[in-house]
Length: 67
Image (tube, rainbow, N blue to C red; front, side):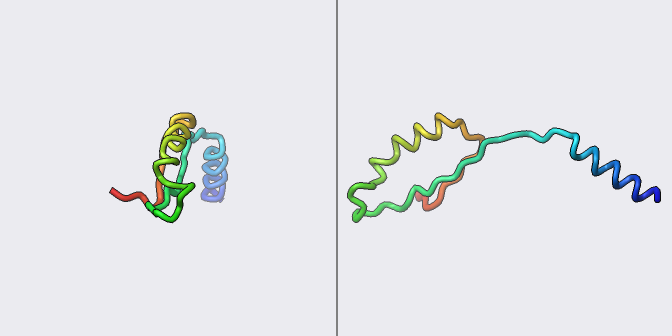
């Protein structure tokens, strides 16, 4: 009985606590492809950087990013 009461109290307290909030984003920058004439990386990088600055992401991930 004591264990059950402890678990119920612990569960209730966990719902009352506040978690930290963060803004996460992800973007597929796509690999460099000469076939994408209207969608080249050079045409997309300025709007993407503006998007990142506007939203102020705390965590940001990319796919197909190469050094």
